[in-house]
Image (cartoon, rainbow, N blue to C red; front, side, top):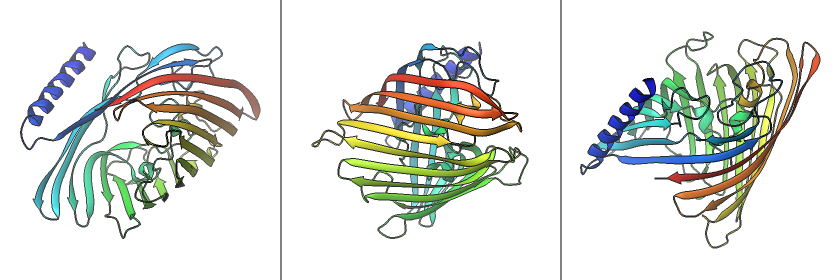
Length: 359
């Protein structure tokens, strides 16, 4: 019955969107539909994790082949210009997961949904948004929104409700900007107003500039505090990226340390930037704050010497501006001590084929 109500609610929302779109001043409808086939020998990395999250190590983890719906979404957004330098902006976006996929209890959930103002002093939004810390990543993550994305080893990929977000206008031709996110409720009971701030220089798409760098700090958003720095550079058809982060759990002082990713993407099609792209990503986590480790064992004060490694190799084929086929292999190696005793987690291999369609 719950899923029936959710489907009816989504249908009503879709009809409302279509009726608004039919008007001359209607908003823009957009979204992404995605389906992937993933085979794993451990079952810890796929979306969602069939072994659960925050459990003791699964003795016989669930291996096999699974269908993944990687955060398919639909939304609409618009702008109402009131003066030359002041506009009202709005966006409503929802994630649509397959209710038949194991582990999905709520197939419909909120994504970036806000009301705000775009002014000559910057952009202000109120509601649910990606944090400034998250956005500072730029496009370093070449496997974003898949089972191999950076959240597997790195916390901070957060979309927060009850938040106020600010992004400054760009200063100068080099696109220098600052941003900040403040949460109006205290989810973790550690500070009155959890927040994150970031500064960026350059174009994360590496189009108007051939480089992008950023620095960001987050305090008590979710369950950690930390800082990160990211950089990207393009040499003709080759794009290189790196991100480094230091994080500390806000209550478990033994859970702290460094993590990083390095990435590369090479375009094989010299005449078409939307052709075939080869991609590679390698990362390490020494904290256990990432999604992958927390899918193995619940964080506690007896954990030490965490070491998680991830290597991902793959390719995209842009069949059109909207349709993208992709394939990749991801390998995970995990070691840690529990009460000073080494734990044997094993190695996981995940093979994924997928199709993403934008509209």
